[in-house]
Length: 361
Image (cartoon, helix red, strand yellow):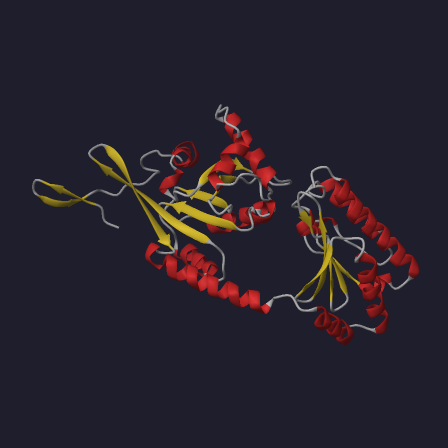
């Protein structure tokens, strides 16, 4: 973009400059300034914290972590360079890392930030006010993560990648912040490059259409269809194991509900819902650590590791350490022996009771 000014002699260009030439640093200046005026990027954003890196085995930090009015977490990655470097890859990594954050963990991060800036405001109250909520709603909190890249310019590699990601339902935006020098002052031109503002509404409609298509494709099946698929895909022994687990679980939990490819377990307490596992029509038991780790009590990693240890004590089951945040699975054939089934039921009983006994669950 060309920035112009009207002088006595006509229309003249305002000279472009660079953050580096003007001595404007990335963190000490650009990041600090945006913290106080995040509305320049999006008026619906609220800053949670800066330099966020509350995860194990990583020294990487999110420049600015925000939340929008729809309770989506927002990763903002800043670069003062002319090409953006590899900021899109960093931002995607950060988005994955924070995707499991809970309302309470976000409150904690904001409380730390408020202490840092010597504010006595209450973090939880501020966030609830921003979301226009009366109380925390974990079910509708941080169900998605947005990414915003801010730089003085972007390379063709970044813009191509961002466009590709947008077409695949990843919510990622590029904002160009270009400095100009005019009459001894530094001016900033802030523009949203991707997606273009005039095409945003159209792209939202396209995404909604695609989400509706995927929802239709993956909608839950009825129980007759589930059992028919089990009988088509599994051996007689495996079918027996699945039916035994179904009949045993049904009175123990709040609900067994069908999915597109099996049935899952719901344990509902006064405060929340927990989904510990699913059994598929192809005879696999999936342990849903990716759900368990979002809520008490299994939000605590030592407890998830204890669950992993208990499962691994059953002959034939092996869940590695790096899977206690995912969806590790094993064949129901492992539970064909009476002893294996007994051990597994004992583990499930422990999981169910641990959730029910947790004061915060």
